Length: 229
Image (cartoon, rainbow, N blue to C red; front, side, top):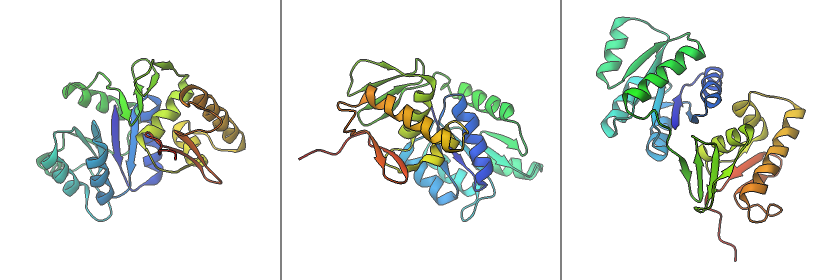
């Protein structure tokens, strides 16, 4: 189950993303309206969490354009609780409203309710290129092969990487966004988990083609590896 979260408040974006990933949702993030619309078309999320006060296109306009394209559930976030704002958001196609500040438990309850209402409460596999990640039994299949069991940390990391394919993600971002950790010890833990994942998904773990190290930065997932000459 993939959720697009749109907010220009990076701290709130991180907190919302962490709460969703802890419940094993795949999360894609945007910080402005234009980026949100691009990701909406490219990633085809199952649900959108959308802030109203965005730079450039505001949340109302983003919601209107998304609704013109699809029936994807949209949960709008606002610091304002006036009736006019709520009515305007619903008129643009929003399905639900949540007023800041809110607890992670309240957010997750709204998310679950929207997914139930839209008939998407059973998690669909997350598929990218050769990789198929099952959210129900925490397994991954490569090129249609037999499902391979993943530990919770391996699953969380792969879920985040598959939701952000072909993007170089820093070590710091991976440890903080996936597990909420920061620090040198966490980088070592990340290396260990990457090593274990490669043992499971790579034909030659010593020469990885899917989970690639970007020297001095972090890692990149290639769902469909480049052809070798």
